[in-house]
Each structure stands twice: as structure tokens, then as C-alpha cells.
Image (cartoon, rainbow, N blue to C red; front, side, top):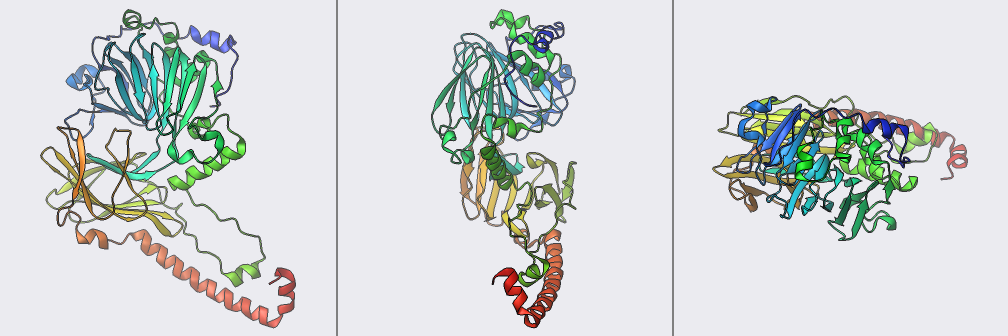
Length: 503
């Protein structure tokens, strides 16, 4: 979807304004709860160790749909949710979103909602001092309708109930204001921007700030758009009723709901985030994103020489990862043998249930490999060409309220984050355990217990490693034969070669 300036008053906007469905039920702002879901939506209660799936019929969800401060909500692919935050706002949440309910709610409270990833639409009660925090920006709002589209700058590879383990990646937060005004404060630079109705921009993550002087404040150039048109395209016609809804508790109580949120995030979010930048800078930032995420091989730019020259130099061996298909279905592993899975992006994981656990339940998705049940041990490796650029060992177990994830980095910089939080931290070198206490909501690094990561995990050899070695050996054999033939040709007739390649 192209986000560009669309003149107000166009026929499409006028048609959409009257397209939202009739109110089916009133919004109750006397409590904080999920009012509607589509697809798979999960909730992690503050004192619990893992996310739990909501029943598709919210009437049977019981207390799970009622939320308290610190609870986390996650929507999966092709899923969405509608919510009401007590005396504060109504919001729509699209697929692949994760956020934490504010600790404090209410009209007079300074409420801070933490959003980790995905797209969220807020209609805020006028006069409520409401803030939304992402890893990139803090948005302060008073009586407004606005959207946050967050491209996560944390590339999660493995998630246990107490810790996400991954690398940093280029990302940012797109802000679109449909009604009212939003004051933005960049999380890293401290610079501020104020957006009004019909204005948008992106607050960029730390890995994108130093590419060009135009980005030094942390924000992309201002965009302008027609609110009705963009709102209808991104969240569906049901959301258009919020443009004319009075931003008061009584006004929002009369809002009949979205009637179904458009769940899909879209495929060009990163390009849209960079809207307004020059084409060369966009290409540069896109290249940085591909490199950081390990989304594919970066091919070196080399001079075109004829076959004889390539034979003399020797062609570089490149392993073809395209034959591997990412694992997509949940699976169970035992404590007897390792199971190897491909996670995409040239990344492989070997996993097994920990001794004493008997079995562990795992699920691969776009947020990495998730441990949903049991205890496990893991070896994760990401390749660039044939060399591992990220590798780590990990284990997980629960001891009462303590969720203990032990990590041993082997190669590359690793970062950690509490599931659902927006802040990340560097994982220390050596073998250390991160203990997250569900009662306090706090975590700390401790010296790893002896045997937390068994020796057999370090010694596990991936099947792909054996295949790389075999194919590379065959490649080197053929390359040597070509080099011998090429040298013979040089000895036989060196004059032509000097003219051709100027050696």
C-alpha cells in the first residue's frame, strides 16, 4: 500500500465515511477487557509463566478476557483483537502484535502502555494523560485517534517463558494521527515532534540513526494524508465511526465496535516506514535490514572476467539454503534425542527436552522458536554463506516463581528481552543464567549452575554442517582441477593472458 498525500473531500473518503456498520453493542469503559477477537489471541497474566490462548467465544473465556496492569496480549498471524481500557480508550490490534497493559489506568492517571510490535489503533478519552511507549518513541496523547505501526528492532531467535534471545535489526515505529494531536519523544535522541490530524512520520530504531544526517533526530520527514481514506484502508470501514465519535466516556460507549478489524499488516511496511526519504537512502537502509536480519545471501560485487580468469582465481563456494523450508507447525521433543528445525533466514535450531522433563512443546513462528511447555536445551546457529555468524547454546527450567534461562554465546552479539517488554539488553559473555521472577516481574543475571548446559549440546553437529562440508570438499576438488588446467594454459601461451587481464 502506498501512503501518500490524498486530497480531502475525494469521493472514496466520502463513501467510506458512511460505510461503517451499525452499532451492535455498546463499548463498556468501566473495565479493562478484550471485547472481540478474531483468530488466535493470547494473554499472559502478570504472575503466570506463559501466554495462554483465549477461547474463540469470549463468553467462555471467563477471567482471561479481563485484564490487569502488567498483563500482556499477543495476536498471531491473521488474528486481531478489540479492547477497552478503563476510562481511557478503545483500541484495535492487528496481527502479530504484542503489548503490555498499563500499570495504572483512569482519566487522571499517567498511563503508559508498552507496545513491542505490530499495529494498534487508539481512540483516547479527551483529558486523559495517556502515553504509549515503544522501543523507539514515547507518544503522549490527549483526546485523539492515532495509530502505531511497530516494526520490531529485535530479531528473536528463541523464546522461553522468561527470556527472548536474539539479535538487533533495523526497525522503527510509524505514527499516523487521524484526529487530534500527538506529541512524540524519540527514545534515544530525546528529540520531540508534534503531529496533527492528517500527519504521520516514523521514529527510527538505533540501527538506522547513523546512516544519514537527515535521520540524526531519529525521525523521517513529515507525511500528509487524508485521515478517512488511510484509516479505512488500514483498519476497515468499521473504524471510520471513530472519526466522528465524541472523545468522552459517554461518546465512546455509543460506539458499536469495529465490526471486524482488517488483520493483515501488509508486506511493504519497512518501505512505507521510510516514506519521504530519497531513493538511494531507502536502498541503503533496505540493504542494512537484509544484512542484519540474515534474510538472504549478500552477493559480493566482483568484476566480470572470462572463464579462464575465474578458473585461475578459483570460484568461491556458496551453499544453497533454498532447499530448506522453515518449520511452521508446533511439535514435541523428548529427552532422548535432538530434533533439528530450520527457522528461515539461514538459521537452524537443535532442540531436546531437558533431562527430567521427558517432553517439551515448541512452536516456530515469525518471532522465533517458542518454548510453550516443559523444559528444554537448545543449540541455535545462523549462517552467512557457509560461516556461522550467530551461535548460542541455551537451556530452560522453572523453579517455583523463577523462570531460569541459561545462555552461552558462542559467536556474534546476542541480546535479550523479557517477552512482551520493549527494552532489550546485551547478553553477557560466558555461561550465565537469567532468572525472571513471575511474582515481582523482575529479572537478574546469575552465575549458571553446574551442568545447566550439558556438554553434549556443545558437541552436537548439525546435519547442515555435514552437508556444507561435503559439498565444499567436492567443490574444492573441482576447483583445484580447473586451476591446474588454467595454469597449464598460462604456461603454454602467457602473452595473450597478460594482454587480456593486465597482470
